[in-house]
Every structure is written in C-alpha cells, then in structure tokens.
Image (cartoon, rainbow over all chains, first blue to last red; front, side, top):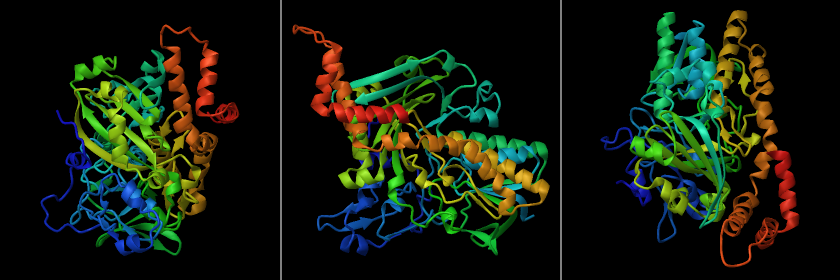
Length: 101
Length: 437
C-alpha cells in the first residue's frame, strides 16, 4: 500500500516529460539575489506545492525547476519581481504530464 | 494551409468546447495544446457542476465510455475541528437522474475524451481543422491593434480570430494587455490533491454508491489548518480525489506549505477512516481563482480575439461549490458561436465580437457578480475557525449521552458561541450568510 508521507514521496508519483534528458531547458528563472536581500516574506517557499523553493541553514533561498508542476503559485505569489515565469518548452524543457489530473 | 477561420489556444475544457462547436458548424480551426495530449497539463478538484456538459455532448450519460467518473448524487458539507466533524448531508434520488447536476472528472482522461469528440466532428464534416499537441504558443501576431494569428517557435499561423483558452496562468492574455502582467496573489488560491485508488467494490460499499453514482464532500475548518480555504473529497470510478484549496496570501502570512496542511487533513480521524486501505497514485496541484471578480481581465475581447474559461477569470465560489469547468464549457461555446456569427458577417473587429461579452454578462458574469457577497463572507477567519469550532462543540455536547443532566440544545449553542466568539459577531456573520449564501 502506497501511503506517501513526505513531499518527496508525493513528487515521486508525478510523471514528467523528458525525464531522460540530461540538461532540460529551465522554464522559470528566479533571481534569488532578490529573495535573499530584500524579500520580506519569501512567499514562494510556502506556496509552492512541489517544494521547488527551499531555504537553507544560512537562510538562503534556492530554486530548482525540475520538480515544477507548472501550477502558477509562484507566478502569483512573488510580488518582488524575482520570478520570470514561462511554460516549459515541449521539446527541450521539463514539465508535467498528468496521468489523472 | 496556414490560414483558419479560428485558432484556439489551449486544449482544456473551454478550448475543446469552442472547437467542438466550430467543428460541428463546419468552420476551419487550429487548436494548439502545449501538452503531449489534451488534458496532459490540466488539473481540477474535480467536479464539473451544472448541466453545461449536456449542451456540448447531449445524452453523454448513455455512453459507457464517456470520460466522466461518476455523477454526484450525494453531497456533504463538513465542519471540522481537530477531533470531530459535523456534517450537513444530503442525498436525493432526483440528483441521480439525467441531466445530472454534476459529474466528477479526472482531467487527463476527461479532456482527452472531449478531444476525441472534436476529432470525430472534424472527420464527419471533412473540414481542414486540426488539433496540434506538444506545441507552445510564444506570442500572438498583431497588425495594428488587431490579433491576426499565433507564433509557435519558428512557425506562424493566421486566422480571422483567436480564442484564448489558456487557463488561469493566462500569459498571452497579459501579453496583449487585457490583464496586467502581474496579477496579485490576493485573488488566487492553490489547490493540491491526491488521487487515491481503491478496489471498485470497496469504494462503492464504503461510500454507499452504485455503479455510476458518486458523492462530493467539502470540508471547512481544521481541513485547511484554519487557513482561508477548504477541503474536498470526490469519488471517481475506482479512486477518490482528496485535496485542499488554500489562499496564497494565507499560506504566505501563516508560513504553511500546502503539502503539510494536506498531510494533516488526511490524518484527521474522519479522513483516515474514509481513506483506509487506499493507494495514492498521483499527487497534483494547480492555481485556481478564489471567485473574486477582481481576477477577471479588464476585457474579454478585442479586435480578432476572445478569452474563454479560467483565462477570463470565470470562477464562481458561492459557498455551495467552486464552479469553473461548467463556465469553461459555456464560455467556449459562446465564443465559438460569436466567431461563427462574425464569419457570416465578415466582421471580426471588437464591435463584431462584442456579442460574446454581452452573452457572458447575461449569464456567467451575472452569476459571478451575485456570488461576490459569498466570496467576501468566505474571506474572513470566522468561517474557517469560529463556525467549525462552534459546530463541533455543539455536536460533542448534543450527541453525547452521559450521567450528567442533559442540557437543552439552545443552552449548548449559546455556550459554544460564548466560548469561541460572541453573540454580536455571530449575528453579524449570520446576517452576512443570510444575504450571501
């Protein structure tokens, strides 16, 4: 019986495109300099359902697009201009393919 | 052939509804979908409420292969605290007769099924219309102020008009200036859900369903960790969809993550008992409008362009259900009908397409406007903290049998109100609810 306990367990159930591609093209760019120097709330870390935005022990924000499910939460949550948001390129990008949806 | 009567951006419910309407009328169109297939990128809670699906595919319930999961015959609204659940529960035979008032869907399958209907209609009419998947539209082509087509990578396609059905993350709608480039988080929420598989007979026995009937259960209170939002559980054919819709601003301000709140929700005794033995087969998430009208673009049409579905902010949340997919169906049909009329009149200017806005104003937008009082009622903490706490306190006293002398219901209610709130605040909330719901 599969009962996911962590976000990593949950993300392991998501089907992504181009999983074998070694260097998929990033579709979202985050200027973490802005997150780390002047963002008062770091909303993206809290709203992202795929944990693409993490905060390390030095309190620095890190972003990875590989787990992104293209939900749009960070597109709306970042009001500091740090997030450049596009849909992944169907050929060269990553991105999700829902089996259930 | 690179010129069409119409180009549709997005193969979700709105885009496919527009496409099916155009295909049946024999118009030529190109529908562009960025996913591997129609539905590949789409997520919903998922109930398609209302009767709009029957407008698109009449008698769809007679088709055993139809892409929906179950029709909703049984509805339940549950107020929760950490220990208890107090429900309003309604089941009706009438809900179990076509045309159904709601069907549960899993979008990957459902949208793909609709796309099959579109392909069939194209073949029947023998028109040069196409569904192109795996294609991302980079920008809209414009001449002067008029939209004339699309560019996808190196390729361009032209049409008399474009229907944008690109969903809530409506980058192209923003690109042409119908909406600001930055849409603030205040009017959107993020939905997260798990699809949990069960043996079909176990599912039907546990939720008291027959072969095709289903239930929808919405949850308020502890479900959302006290955050603005709510929970849901919908039965599919061989699975349940269980999840949450949470306001972005509240996640930010209370520093919670949606997956942590979801894990707590699933661990609540009521959910634990309903989900026992199930196997999670997919985790998903997507942004959805809260139902606040301020999410809508400043206009939904311009020269050579119409915007349909959630790209146009067509979401209604009146406390009874979050509706969007039915509006996607209806706005898609309306946009296509407007395009067909414009084709007859050879007028694809904004004036020629203005009927689309008029049709929306008289139907969907009217309903959304009427629902704004409920949206504001559902915005405050009272609905997510106080009301569930009072309901569960009442239940614990009222339904308990003990050695103590039994209290009258009225006494229990007034004690619970005093514990969690005040008469004045509850009277105010009651008045808002009376007007809003």
